[in-house]
Image (cartoon, rainbow, N blue to C red; front, side, top):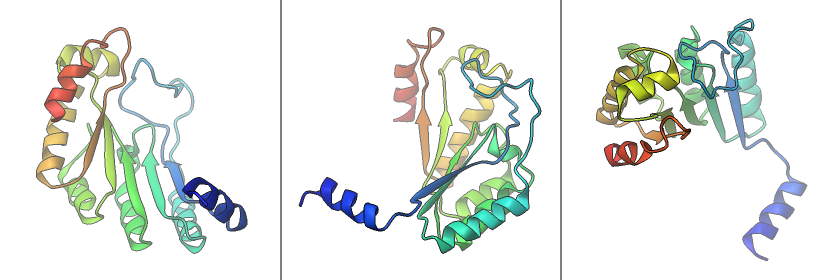
Length: 179
């Protein structure tokens, strides 16, 4: 059988959750113009007890990977503990963040948990263009500095460049910088 047939048959007979994504908070410090989250609504964090319980249940079910996102997941007051618990449970760990909230203690945890990847969006190498999209003055500088710190700390970073009318000519500069 080919690979597709093998996996289709295998998972039909042995279903399990391969990966799980936690939207740890709906709060975000940016107001990206293309974001799907309605910022005028009630912003909430997932209760820590629920996240810890789900991490243990997912481990028991044989789940392979977890992703933490938001809003901005680094705003959750228990984010460091979530990452450490995910490592303790031997998950492949991914994080989606704008990185503007990265501090030294979080950098230490991100390094310690051996991330699969940390994904961040860079909209342009022109700070004003990036900040216009995020609607957070100084976000470009903070994000770029955080990326450089993560790379220096040997934390794998994936840079995405969502394109729209304002920045569609900018992705090449982001790509060149990433290289």
